[in-house]
Length: 472
Image 1 (cartoon, rainbow, N blue to C red):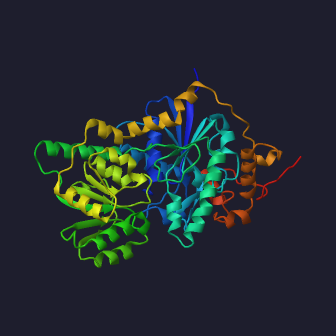
Image 2 (image 1 turned 120 degrees about the horizontal axis):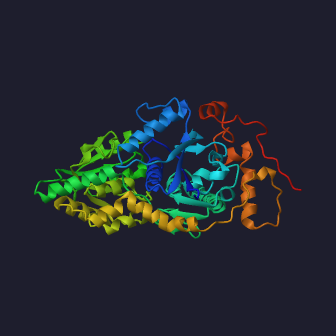
Image 3 (image 1 turned 180 degrees about the vertical axis):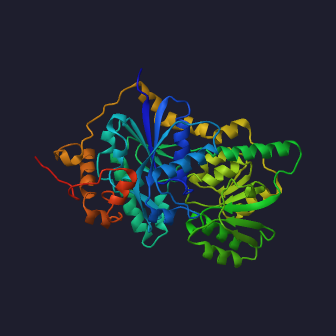
């Protein structure tokens, strides 16, 4: 009997942090494992207690990886109607406060044994490989697929010296993704462009939202009023997550939207500033703490306003459409996937926003057809992923697999092809603490520390911090 194809899904976050890179790879792993034809492993970051307190909401912490795994599996079981047999493994991570991100520590490719290294899916490949120092992903795995989640350039442009930082980041991202990934899938054209990349939304929606949509459809069919509330927005409460655009639109068009009432839900660094800006408006704009979008609190809203232009494919927009709501959003590449749905109302400018919002509030949402509902599902998203990644073809043909030896034990030939040389340069640069810190790495993240090794059952690193370069 042939060994099952093994797919390792690596990502940059984990529950209970309710971010897209924690939730979507979890669903991807579950649905890839659903038919039992492949062996799936989800590889997620483990944070020590001090970092857990900074990242996870509601003072949720875990004393061991097994405790966090139980939490994750329980969360998933409450949302899918099948038992999915995939493994979960943890890699050491540290939280970078300045980047509001979890960064890998050490060579996380080692989490997967060489004999299981068939296919790696890197959710946010640039993020996972900026400071990677170890085995080259393309050598260890027969196929490495990068899924681009985040529009990093757009976020960086909004910071101090943003244009210069974005210029540098664009080339760093292109560099690491090209040397570590065979294939690149961009969720939408809103991301940075990469050579020979494919644009395809390979994400679906939490099935709970589709169930809400079905109930709303039944209410509409029976003649009941399915939606009794007006307009709202939900998202992490930072200016770059759509609040800046939304509050500007409301401020500039207060006269035309005099009767509009909007509820804003979210937590974040800019909560106080958002509250102050909302109070200055003549409109009724209420600001509330963040809440799970699946909460019944949101079921009766009819219109979801989302003017954000920093998203790639907005998860909350997908969820709102699945619940049968009308969505008002900007004519932006991040929203291209949603244009196929009749309840998606696109606007180009302030005047268009006024018209789309007024019309949405005056109409009833069109019920989703079965085909439209399926298009939003994780079943359809998984089909799209298998198609564009050509995983089924990989099953039928063996790809050449090169040695996975560490670069530190390799002789370098200056006349090798440019990609190999480029990968070697990255390996060397990422092996020196001074270089790593100059490019923004967390101090001491070249290897996991003793605490992380003990928590994860890893061997404590022994030897030199810096790479040994051989030229023979």
